[in-house]
Length: 306
Image 1 (cartoon, rainbow, N blue to C red):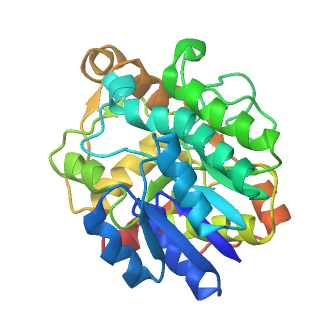
Image 2: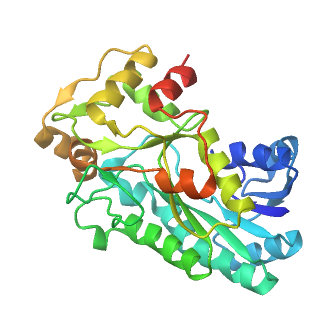
Image 3: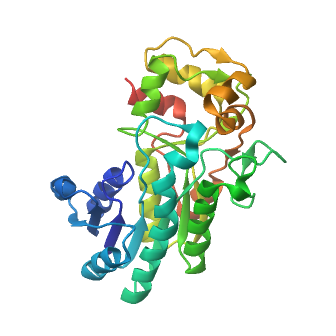
């Protein structure tokens, strides 16, 4: 199968491309940086320089690759996490999830690409009603006031647009693994990543290799619909953050009350750590036949930071 990976040099792309190649697929992978083409060749892909926010660039790249499937992994999330100014931190990523998605789908239609798989999000859910673990049938909400939140609108745009053409939206949990959580771990080591309140909010994690393997299955099975791509163990902040600190050889995180955290890090951080809901992976395991190398973040954190 000819697979076009948009965002081949991102943290997911760098783990996904080798898995696709190992299973015999012909992979074209994109980068915005010409200097990174050699790295993609080393992974076994045909590299192409593409600007995901330029319709002409996207159209030419897709037409040249003539793929059977497009995998949308384009983001621009880098640097120290800034939840207090999340709209600013995610500004380019939000554009890639809206304009970039539109460009890829237009190119798919123009070139006759029959299938699209796209990255969505399932680290934590802000919907407080119901249980602490959400399925794909539950509404997706990242925090209060989300109707006006550009990040949430961007995620919804990805899902609605891809589902409209019969594709698959993969809601990756909190990604960890090589290169994915370096900035967070550094903050933990500096004791600049405190536990907020009682830390009762839940999150869902997934190792990069497991996220990539689920994506391969969605590609090969021409899956359609929404899938939560998370590990087996929903993680309360009161457990995962001290455990991450221990694995990183750091002192336990400091505790701060909600009002202090709200001033320092904003409402998103407070909601995530105190009220966040996790996700169930039952559908992905059942319908895709997905098995995890790292079924728990406990195992994954320990191995990643060994």
